[in-house]
Each structure stands twice: as structure tokens, then as C-alpha cells.
Length: 474
Image 1 (cartoon, rainbow, N blue to C red):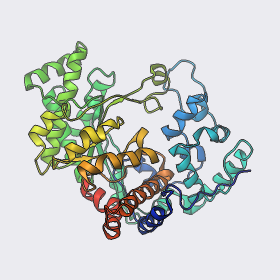
Image 2 (image 1 turned 180 degrees about the vertical axis):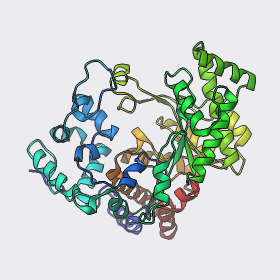
Image 3 (image 1 turned 135 degrees about the vertical axis):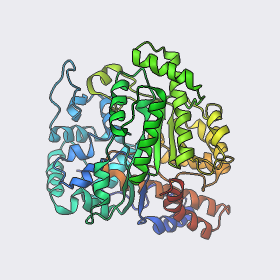
Image 4 (image 1 turned 90 degrees about the vertical axis):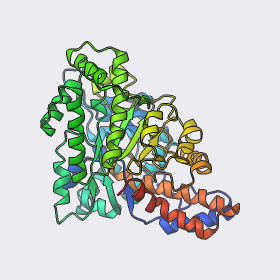
């Protein structure tokens, strides 16, 4: 059996002199509080604070990083706990927690060299105290050990929140959400953490989507404003943004296929809205509507100060049969080539130097880091370079990001690390990975005499605290 024992110098530079500097920088921030300004953990989990009864439901099923790669080597999604949407053909019962765990253990070698393997090894050893690596042989014994561990009070959600030293945890929420869990946590004297909502209005931007009209109805009810016309929709979104802000929200999030942001005249937007409700809208008009909505959301951020996060360049639900069977967020959203400098011209022309407006740009097309995002952040006060995201939040991806962005934008115009996860127990492992890599990058600047050790130490602290707090107005 293989022992599970992550190396203390993992991810630090191989050169002995640089590694020694990196050790000191990492040690200075290793235990610093975690600021997580973008993620997908459910606030209700912390409110209810119920024990986790199934290791697979906690560690595997909600993590599309894990699910997609297991599916890629032939493991059916049903076996991984994904449930068929209502009335889908061929629906079968999802695998049990033990069966899902066995699937991971049987395919443990699939993750060699990936960030998933790194996160899991750090998590299994550091959070749960496992000493043997997953395998087909150890699967059942490890599962039983995890079930026993999770039954203890110190492994309930709030206890882990404190143990992970999370200072702020942001969730991602629909504008029509009543935020009842957030409000209850805020007012609960027994919970000392800070959990803030993030306003995500993507699904109101796409009038060709079958769910668009139903979402307008839900938003109308939540805001008590009729969304039967475009002006009403914008008023409802403004109202809900104010509600989110009053509940502690500091940011919004938007994901689009491209960053086009040309605003429509009011009359054109109203015409398209009417045609969408009537079911006669064209694809070209739907695209124009999405782009004017992106502009209007930026306009709202320039008014209310909620930090705008933009994740452009992702093809959602690439495999339609999987989407039809299992719904969204099931592992087949894929990168597209992207751009920001030209598509964002209307937004940056009108709001780019507005001191209230702030936009954090993310990409899965890493050619944009040096070509567009860093130069934009290096001029516009409102623009910040978002951390490597999704397919790029790996050790190699983070290293390439630092090298690509620092020349043009420095450190202060970056976002701080973004864990972007639904997998609650992976949060400390993901942030630890970033801290180790940043320590190594700063150490390389010290040993090549581009930074003093004092400046590097100051930057190491700023990257895990001041920069995310300031960027996201936390």
C-alpha cells in the first residue's frame, strides 16, 4: 500500500537557494486567514450545520473537476452520483456513496500530475488525517474511516469553517434568491464567520433559453416589479442588487460566451424583449440583447459600487445529450478563444475611469493574460486581472499567469486567489497551493535581485489579505 504523505516542500522551487527564500515567504503566510471572494458553496449548509454523512457527496459529486475527468476515462455519470433531470430517458438510480468513492479509488492514477490530485492529497492528509493513498484495495477501509471522521463534531460545517480560518466566504446566488440563509447567518450570534452573497444575473441575459420567461416571473415576484418589458427587468435587477448589497454582498458575477457590450437604444431593447416573450426572437437579436444587458449590468456597477466579475469565453453545455439528461454544471463547459480589449470598448469608454466602477476580468484563454487583460489593468483604474480560473488554476497555470501579468500590471492590479469551488473541504488546499506558488515566484525575483526580501515579504502578505480585500471591497 502507498503512503499518503505530501512533501513539506511541494511546489516550492527546485533550486536550493531560491527554495530557501520561498520557504521563509511561504511560512509567513501559510496560516493567514482565507479570503474567498468567489465560490459556489451553499450558505444553507453552514446555517443548518448538519454532519456530513457521505464522503462522496462532500468530496466528489459536487466537484466538476473530479467528475469530468472520471467521466473522460469511461465512468458513467450515474455512477458518480449525478441525478437525471426529471423525465429524462434512460434514467437510472445514482450510485451509492460507497460506489462513487470506489470509482475514485479505482481510477486514482488518472489524476497523476493534475491539480485535482494535489488538492486531494493535501485535503485527505491535512483535513481528514488519511495515511494511505486511495486504491481499489484501500477503498472500503478509507470510506469507513471518512464516515467515522465526518460523524465527529469537529468535522461539522461550522467547525471546519473555523478550522480552515476562513475570514470571508462569498457564494453565488440568483437575483431572485431571498438570501434567507445569509441573513440568518449574519444575525446568528453563535456564528462568527462572514458569508456574503454574490449577484449573478446571467440567466436573465439569454432570451432564447427555455427558462428565461420563468425566471422573469420569479424575478418579478422577488422584486415586486413587472418584468414584462425591458425597462421593468432593469428596474427589478437594480432593486435586487440593492437587496444583495444590504445583505452584505460586495460583488456580482457574469459569465458570457463573449465580452461584447454594445448598448441598444431603448426602443430596440424593448422590441427584442417583446419578441422574446412572443417566441419570435432571432439569434442575432438574442446576441444583441445579451450584449446590451452586459453594458447595463456594468452601468449598474458604476452606480452602486458592486464589483463586477466577468468570466467570458466559455462554451456552456457542449454535449447536449449530457445536458438534456443531467442538466448544467456537469463537466462539459469548455474553453473558447476570447477577447476583451475591443469587445469591452463601450463599457470602458463610459465607465473605465469612474472611481465607483470596478471590473475583474477572468479568462480560460491564457493568451489574453499578457495580450489584453494585463495591459487593460495597467491603464484603467477600474480593471483588475482575475486569477487563473478553471482549466488554468493549476500550478503551471498560476506560474504562467504571474509571469504574463506582472510585467504590465504588477501585483496590486490582480484579484488575489480565487478558489471558485463547490467542494467545501478543498478550499484550504487550493489556497495553500496558491500561497506556495506565489512564494516561489517572489523568491525567484529575490534571487535574481529584482526584489528585496523585505519587499517580497510585504507582497506575500498583501497577496493573501490586502489585495483580495481591496479588490472586492470586502
